[in-house]
Length: 271
Length: 284
Image (cartoon, rainbow over all chains, first blue to last red; front, side, top):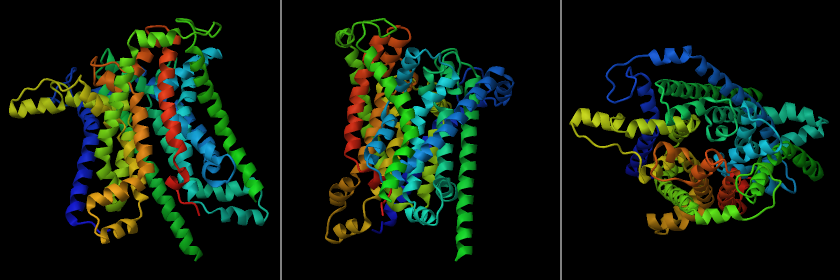
């Protein structure tokens, strides 16, 4: 149905305003990170980059970054592998319990993360596991592995089963089909899922809160400093994590765009 | 062919099923078991009773539950109204610009919730980005806008914005254009199309979005702590206090179990009525 230009314009303006509002708090943190004053007040009178230098010099901050990176990388790898197979069961294969499976896999996403974290803390206690950053990986997986599955499943829906069947008819084994056909076709979904998993783990706070024991992740440290014992490093460290997320998203997008172009080029060569 | 897919489906599902059984179902069962233990014990070797649930009613914990659910409901309702026009634009009007919106919104999702809420504190506090500049430019002095219930609800709406927007946009994109065109040709007004075509046909997306925002907001804690100060205490906060300062795991578990049961019932109810294949991709 054609839309009146006025409707279009109004919706566009509304969209742009919404985006601006979404970024207001992030802008506030970024501005604050360049303020020279130890205690923040706006308008900012003198600008400085000293808090960034201090953040890089601080061994606490580099330690936190290392911990968060380790957690996020392992969460990403595990989520992508189980999510890949999960997505095939979710969207590709027709099997008897598919409907139940779909709903069961999505269920954890609907649970409050704090509660999931607490439940895991009690579970670790019941089976005599001492919480460290490794247990935080497990906690992140509860919420993030289903999301990775979902992201890859979206891709798997647009998958033509005839391709796999043709390969099977020509005598390809299960693993051959997986490597030569399924994986390349789902690859963009796998990459986005990996990106999602990494970034959601990198920024996650509620799941880490009860499950890291004596270790701290970056968001946990930021929260602790916001609630009590404010440190002027909070805005700069916060801005750094934002920057890292934005950069990774851009890298991911470039990759998806590039692989799309390559596929198009290959298709036009074939025909 | 059918038999192969039967087996492959089960085998592919196995890894995530095993993981979820170990780190999702088992912990929830432990919570359920602890909820019936006598107060302040740290293991399950005791006779079960209902003491913790009595405490829930006697010591007024239900007010926290009502705050959590009430604010979650308000946030969901506000978000639906705010997101609908944008989701409609993304699904039907914007074309390529909706990709820009999607990416911009997804990026905010990857910024730790803490940092974004802290940004709101910096924006809204006395002498913050908003009021500080207001004072510098106009001389008007306003006390901080933080630490009240409306700001918590707005914080919730802000934090869970993407969880409403994307399902809504997906739902609205499922409304076929020719049906809307036909209704319009037959003389239906804009409102009538909205009420009798758009909303009912986009219902799966509306349900998923509303459910996600409601349950996430009902279990949220950072918003009330950072934006709300001590204005109200929500359920997740009570649960945390029972576990940390209170050192009362059975009470915390009972409170968590109550929240889990409410949320779980809603989630299972909604998920059971939704055709996931239909929402996520067309089956050939």
